[in-house]
Image (cartoon, rainbow, N blue to C red; front, side, top):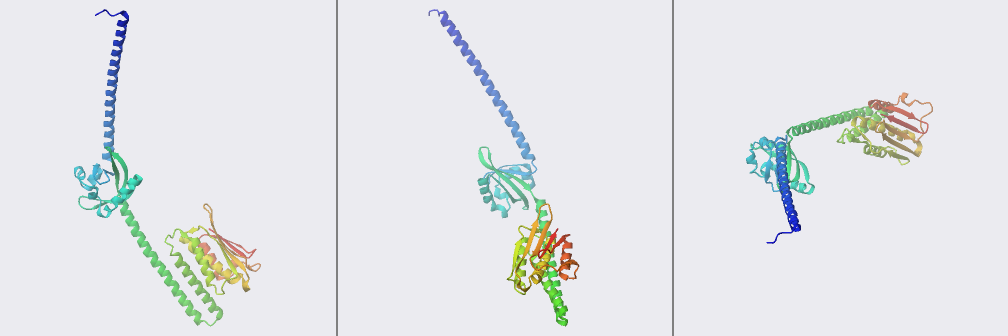
Length: 370
């Protein structure tokens, strides 16, 4: 073999050096990859430990299962409160755990889960002794070991259901009591009206008899108002706008002379009152509108009666009742006059701590603020 030239020798040395360098890089890279794998495995182990600690020590039951109801994993809270061992629960199906009355909801809830990704619903879990544990389930779709699964957080709601049952019982008792009170009020008014009718027939004085008849008509109208308001189920939020529509239509239709020459304008929209304010306001409207119909438009005089109500968020509620009729005689102090109807209005305003402003410059206008 011929001796290598100097250039060939240098080239061989360079090539050898390059091979050595590549080998060192490979060794280093392999060491880095190995270390990265070791680090990743350590992190994975640590994450698994944290997950398992949270999973097992959660205050709520946790169960992981698939859409067919096969159970993959459960935490300690889930199986101990039902009386099972973990090994036993992992051999069971979801249908074995859910109370029969809730079993038919499983397919519906799974369908909602697949559509929305999450679902919250009430259910009942069956303990090993056969008793039912009321629960609220918050479920979501997850990936578990490469498969689609459902993770359900199951919260016991025994105390909440007991409280709900107590509230329902209390409400039922309240409804019975209110119904009895309503019937008693109705019976009392009926007894008074019968007494007034009896005395009206016995009294020969026409004025006194007419007064008794008017009083009887007033009581009957009051009874209808109470009966109508009691039909509203939510006594803390009565739709007063719908009530006023009913009340005024009844007033106009029942007026003895028949009203065709007087127009009615209502501006009572989105007004809600509790029963303590609704009843006095209804009785005030009854008295004042009746008075306008009876006295403000004599001899078929044409005119208008207006009812307005304004409810301010941070201010008083105002009820305005006005007409453009003949008004009051000059100098008359209406509330000092011995007129029974207006004395009633004053008493009704006291019941709701309201103020009354009277303006008789153009017809008559009452502004009740409370």
